[in-house]
Amino acid sequence: MVTLALGSVGEIFIIPVNEWTIINKRVGQVLATTAIKDYMATVLPEYPALLNSCLQWQNSTFAGLISNSQALSNYCAVAISDFSSLNAQVKEVIQSGSQNLPDSLKQQTIDLLQKLSKVTAPMAAQSNLLSAEILTFLNCNVTVDAQMAIYKDSLGTFWDPLGDTIKNLEAAAGHVTGVWSAITDDLNYTLGLPITVTIPFIESLNIDVAIASWQNVQAEAAGFPAMTAGQEQYWTNPF
Image 1: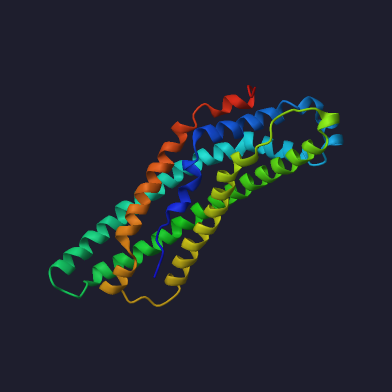
Image 2: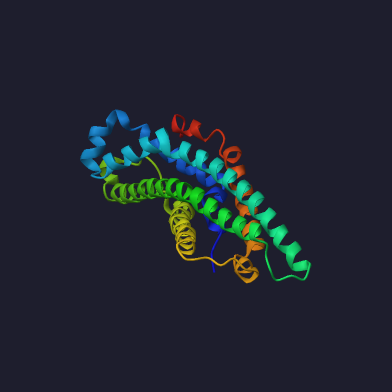
């Protein structure tokens, strides 16, 4: 059975806005220490890595999330259109009482699977890159928070630990990588085999389920830019 879609690919985009606010305020708090970065590095060994990851967040990671959400929404829209058309045609054949698909429909099925595989690969690569950046950012924060707790007497308190706030984002970033890999691998494996397109084969694609999943993910991804609008303000006004 081929997995055409999984809802977890949009998991990052349903994290509540208040959590994004806390995360972006942390970026601003770290950036506010740039003037004393040399001192910070003497007290917190992992501070330079944290500062770099926050600069990357400011320069590319967060904007990349916005772009990725828009690309994912478009990806889902095309998949919904393509496979809804195929699904309707197959159902017409079944309703007619025939178990034989016309050659044109067989070829359309293969063409759509190849098309989906082709557009899935760059989506997976972009999402995986962003997930890696997010996880690096989160790991740097956890490490420095722990170091701050050790040196709080000499350093004082610059910010509160992120603690449980990052767990949703951490889990989502991890899930996204695994889910895109599963979809990509399934499509590559299926298309690497000789395919005999029959009604049972098309039924095994669970197109109705895939369409419902794409619709949910499209709504989640499409809403992300509006939900997080204005978050950049916290990079310069985190307090």
